[in-house]
Image 1 (cartoon, rainbow, N blue to C red):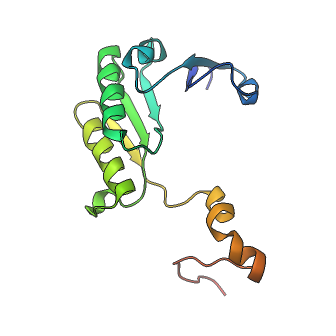
Image 2 (image 1 turned 135 degrees about the horizontal axis):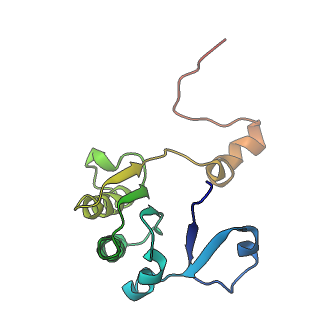
Length: 145
């Protein structure tokens, strides 16, 4: 968007060449385990898109991020979560995302995105039937003719 700055947090600005593709994006090194690295990432920012790694430390990482976001005056957090976090099921991925969501719900306006799948899942999880049967199977209704 015109007049908007985009800052992307990366673990390292020197590793790999994929960062070269991010034209017009300011890169800042962040380690979620070290809250002090979040301060420059949040400087002059008002919105945060949060995509944290799948980790048993998800609650601690979310706490670090939310605390620093509050200190920096972040006005909106958008977290990419997963479908089913609100179900109450005690399954590790759901539980970890729900813990993070509960922490985010503690003061800053938020939006949770809960997608149910990504395109890479077709390669990672459905490739055997795609290769052997030229088909993939999902728990979805058949629509159309």
